[in-house]
Amino acid sequence: MQNQPTVMTLASQHFQVLRLNQSRDSLTIKRVELNSTCPQQILITNLFNYSETAENIILSYDCRSRGGSNYSFSCRKGGREMFPVLFKEDENDCDESSEKVEIPVGKKAFDNLMSGTSAVNESLIEPFDMRYFSYGVYCKLCRHSGGRCGSNESLHSVLLCYCRDRPHRLKCQHAHGMPCFF
Image (cartoon, rainbow, N blue to C red; front, side, top):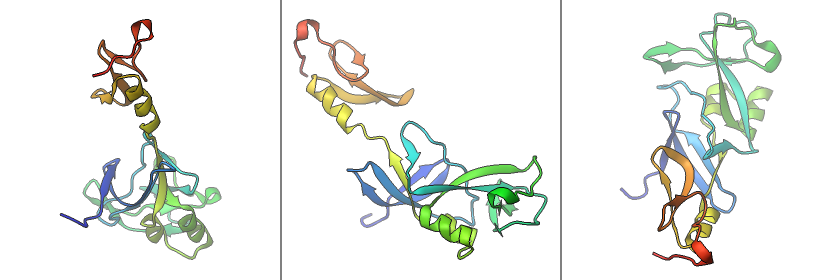
């Protein structure tokens, strides 16, 4: 279907891609939904990382103490209703057994949340930026050496340059300095 928003999945969560900036290797994304699934931590890999415009907040799940909390909201986790709580750094009133999850939000959403002008559930669905690793420069080097750029099923985030003799890390290694072309 045309004109459907691009949706990507990170850590079993769905995010709508709002903008792609290839010159800065960044994406602006936002959570597709919140109430049906509690937010989870996004695992940072060799391919994705937070940008300098994203801030982290810490949500506490199964927090037995509600005193001193800034915000709480309702979501579902493992088929049951949860009430994650956000505490400011010096106010965490939960016991040690509560699960704590670090969640990225945009800088503006973070500032509004910390100043009390927005609720945590509103801030969690605001857009934020992620940086991604682009293989463009490396693939160009590989192609220029006569190879074809790719990866291996077991090494998803590692670039391989497929050459006539065998795959190499970044570019084809040629005997006597002669390039080999496919």
